[in-house]
Length: 176
Image (cartoon, rainbow, N blue to C red; front, side, top):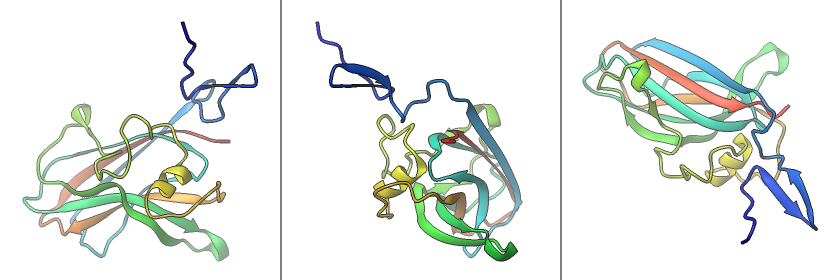
């Protein structure tokens, strides 16, 4: 019988240790964010702020389905907070979701995961990775943690044609 180690436990040189990629002993954090309006393709909904070293578990959404047309992308932008400003630089605009329809009502207790909707990420193997490592699987070229603050963003890929209530839930483990 062989011992097979999962991503939470590592074996090296005969010693067993808890992996630094693990959720073990950490507290899961959740950010809830809602928006009510008619966002256009020039708008950016800022869902929440995370550190590049935080571990992403899931990103989910729900909606009242108020629009009959419209969709959005979910991705990452880096945040510059210098000089009392708030400046976003797109890292990967559709890392998590690409053209996710917002036209059918989805209740909070039936919320939909958009973690891997865009097809860039693997639903099983990429959950629990740091945000910077997920960004590197998409459009970014990070080889180590850049120590940034990231904004999880939703940008309409097509304008929602009526006022729509959108809700987002980001589940992650802080890397600090």
